[in-house]
Image 1: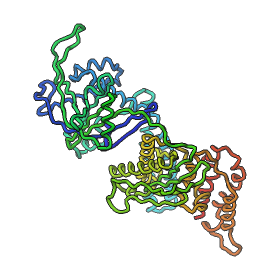
Image 2: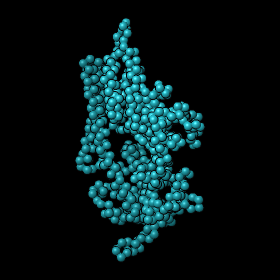
Image 3: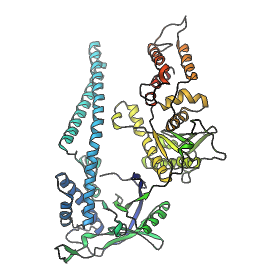
Image 4: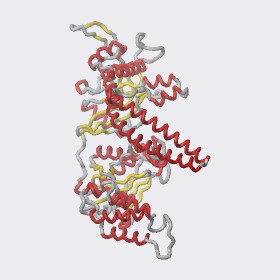
Length: 569
C-alpha cells in the first residue's frame, strides 16, 4: 500500500517520547522441514505462506471493517479463515483500521485542496474564454486555433475537478472513503496497460508481515530480535504450521508449538548499541518484515525512547535557518536580535561519509555570524541520494546548534497540493524543492539530540532581510532572511527605520521623470509604481504602532515593499 524506502529513519513525537525506527536486512537461514498442505501453494516456502496469509487477512479485515464488523468478531473469525494466531490476526485488523482512519482524516484536507484548485481552474477557464472571444473578433486563424485548444483544456480541467470534489463530498456525507488499492495504484495502472506482470502484482500484495510488541512477553513474541555471540538474529513465528492437539476446559483449541524461521539480522553500526540496550531493558518493539522485488528481506524495528533533555537555552539566542533548493543559510543571533560572531576556533564539522567528488559540500563562513552550507546535488540528485544528503545536512546544522548552545529557528513553510495548479515554472520548483524533507530532517535530528526547535511564520522574511539587513551587514538575501527568522523567533517586531524611509524616498526621486524625458510605460514613475508608493505612504506612517500579527499580515507594508523591489529592478 505504501512505498517503503531503504535506510530510512523516522522519529515521531508522541506524549513526550520518540518513536524511533531502525531499518536493517534479514538473512533467513533455518526453515521448518515440512510444509502445510492446507495453507501452502506449490513450492512456496513457509515464510512466504505466512506473509501471504497475513496480507490476505489485512485486506479481508479492511472490507469487513467498512461493513461495520467489530474487531473482536473479526479476530475470532480471522484465525479460522487464515490459520494465523490471535496476535497476527489482531495486528492485521489494526493495520486495516489504520488505513481507514487515515483516509477519513485526509478527506477534509483533500476537499479543501480540491475546492481551491477548482476555483483557480474556473478563473483560468474564464480567461481562456475571453481570449477566444478576442481571437474570433480579430478573425486570426492561428490565434483562434491556439485559443480553442486552451479553452477546451481549461474546460476539461474544470469538469474533472468538479467531479472529484463531488465524489469527495459524497464520501464525507455518507461516511465512506475512496477506493483503496492494496499494492499501489500506480502499479495497478501499469498492469492495466500491460506494462507490468501479474506475478509482480501478486508479489507486491503479499510481501509483508507485521507484529506488535508486548512488554509482558519479552518485547515481541511473534518476531523476536536477539543478540547472540556478537551478532543480532531474528526469529519469525510461522503459526500456520501449528496444529490443533485438543481443546481446553472452555472449548478453545490447544495448538502445538509453532516453528520459527531464524536468521542473522544486519543493522547499521550506529544503531547496534541502541538496539542492544533495548533488548536488555525488555521494552516492547514492533517489527515489520518486507520482502523486496529482489527477494531480499528488509526489517523495520520500531520502539519508543524517552525524549532527551534540552541542551540548548533560548535565552542565549537562536540559530536562524533559511532553506533553499541547494542548501541552507545560517545566522548566529544573540538574544538582543543582533548577529553574533562565531566563537573562537569555530569550524563547520565536515561529514565523514561524503567524498564523492570535490565541491559536493561547500561552506562559506562570514566572521560576523553568517554561514552558508551549499550542497549542489540537492537540486538535481535522485530520491535516495537526496534523502541521504539531506540527512547529512541536518546532522551538520544540529551539531552547529549544539556547539553554540542555541535553539534553531526555522520557517514553517507549506507547499500544499492546492498551490500546485498555477503555472509550469512554479509547479516544477515546488515539486523539486526539498524544503519539507530538509525541515523534517532537522526537526527529527534536533529532537533526538536535545536541541530546541522553534518554527516561525515565514511571511515577508526575505523582504525584511532585503530592505533592512542585507546592505547593513553586507550579506546575501538568504543570510538576511535567516537573521529575520531568528529575530522573529526571539519575539522582535520589525520597525520601519529612518534608513528605510530614506531608501523609499531615494527610489521615489529616482523614478520621477526628468523634465526633458519622454513618457513610456516601464520607464520612470509608471502608474503601477506610483500606486505602490502611494500605498506605502499611507502604511509606513502607522506601521510601527501596529501589533506584531498586523505587521506580519499578507497586505502589510512589507507586501508593498516587495512589489516595489520587483518593480524597480
